[in-house]
Image (cartoon, rainbow, N blue to C red; front, side, top):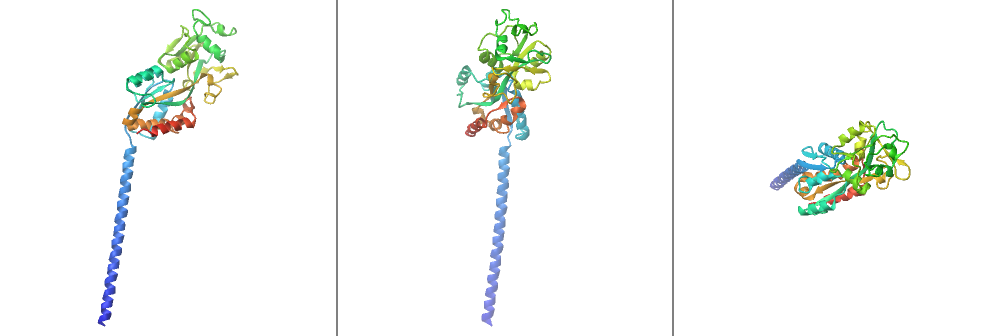
Length: 343
């Protein structure tokens, strides 16, 4: 009997010990899971805090690029970083570089490539082009000649007719050119020439690249604001002006775009025809933005916005909506890789 009682007591003690160990294991497991959950939540909160940026991004430069960059900035602030303020100006390409070179802006938009003289100025300010400053081609623009809605004779012109009419002395020594000087059956009325002023890359593209730096007619009225050009042409049947396709797209109710014959028949400027290998190639040019890499390293919001600009959601998606033709995917992908390498 004693042996049996001792055996039963031993079994009972072992059972109690097993149950206790089981409870300890359950409790330890529960505590471990709770700790792991708390750690995961903490990491998620930390990641969220790191992703939420604030501060300002300063962009200035090309009036031609302005509608595209302003749209990109708007989408970024709404969909990506609501506490980041992206401020986009439109002083003009040359005026924009004058702010960018001394470090007043984070980005400089331009409707023409940066000049060697501007690269030298960057070096004077301690910035090496290609390292401290990166160049991004945003899209293609088509320089567009616009006329009054009531002008029913000059809807189609050859490239040479357009350029020659703007060259000083080609048709008249006093630069008072009549439509009939261009084609005899057109009205004997003075052509009123308009365009953007020297602050704009569009002027430089027209004057330096297309006119080959030949003097422009003295009667040309050059303006700072594109909206002023729209008003001037829309109110004068004898007016003609040049600017980026995007501004024409925004004012098709007021203006008519001239179809240009580059040698194979008239071509209307359009997103589908603008490009270096497309039918409107003769008046096509890339548009740019330039990034101060030092600021991208110092200010997370600047780098983050730069990544958005060249992402599939940025310039590529929004180019067509603003009168530009997007670059090939490979171009944007190369820029993304450059930005990923910034530490």
